[in-house]
Length: 55
Image (cartoon, rainbow, N blue to C red):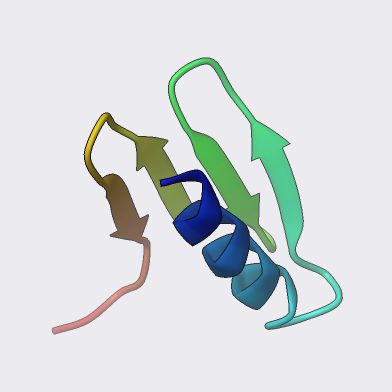
């Protein structure tokens, strides 16, 4: 999972120069104006929440 996270992290940070990374107690938040993506590391997977509006 660590290697997968490293690849994912690199790609998310490359989306825009304004993307910031914040390590919190239970998850890692990638932000522009608000949370763009939240990543919750789990034993056998990365739970990824993409925060975007859609109808």
